[in-house]
Amino acid sequence: MKLTQVCAFLGALILSSIAMAEGGGDRTFDRMMAANEQAVQAFAANQAKNDSVVLNDAKDDKTKEM
Image (cartoon, rainbow, N blue to C red):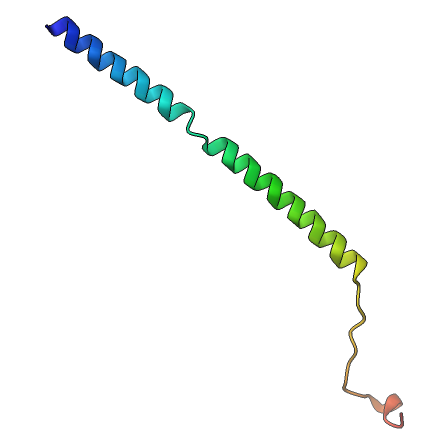
């Protein structure tokens, strides 16, 4: 009886450690980081393409007459 309980305990311990070791969290994190990197690159490319000139409404002494 004790041998059966010990084997059942060891089996449960082994199965739980295997299940905990590969939970998929690492793969999910890798996919998230890859998607983030792609988004950052797309944003940077879009910003480089759309460099806009900022217009200032305030006029200085040189442009008051315009």
